[in-house]
Length: 68
Image (cartoon, rainbow, N blue to C red; front, side, top):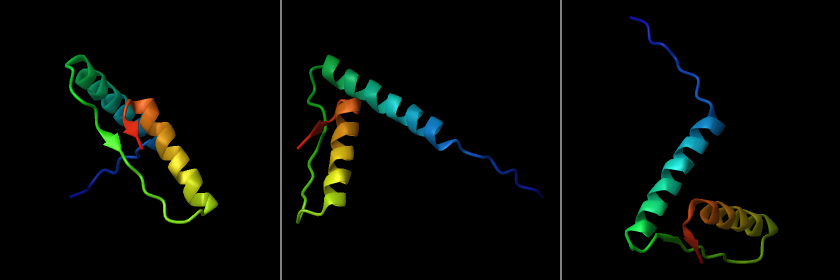
């Protein structure tokens, strides 16, 4: 019995998932439903943590998800 491995293209897969999320958020909006929000809490002022939160906010905005 042999198993066949499949190589996943991370960027392609991520783009596909992001498009599905974006479509779901558009559907929520068109139905008048409230879209999900991501709320982040940062303890301290670590520059890498600030960068990470900035990336989260950027992606949330791209996907139509609120960010606090």
